[in-house]
Image 1 (cartoon, one colour):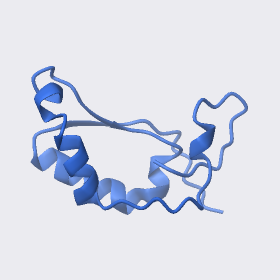
Image 2 (tube, one colour; image 1 turned 135 degrees about the horizontal axis):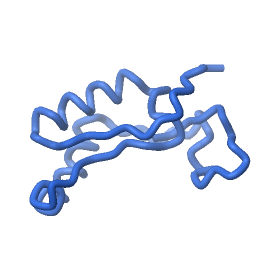
Image 3 (cartoon, helix red, strand yellow; image 1 turned 180 degrees about the horizontal axis):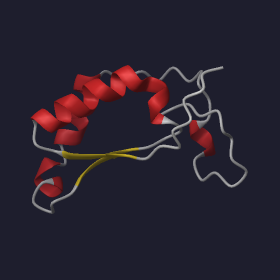
Image 4 (cartoon, one colour; image 1 turned 90 degrees about the vertical axis):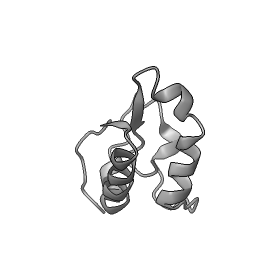
Amino acid sequence: MQGCHLKCKYCQNRDTWSTSTNNLISVSELVEKINRYEKYIKPSNGGVTISGGEPLLQIEFLISLFEELKSLGYHTALDTSRNVYNK
């Protein structure tokens, strides 16, 4: 997910720092994309991990996404620095 205020020196995802990128997607659009891989994800006992940037900067979206994924039987995980300071 897009946006991170930490700007760590050795970040591997520098392209996710900006909070001004306007590539918006709805929860239903993202779930549709994830569902394309359902036949691989579920039989392998895998799941969906959300990372970024800092996913918690978009907490409402994240909650809606996880609720939808859980209702469809996906395992979910969150990769976060827990830094939600919003400038």
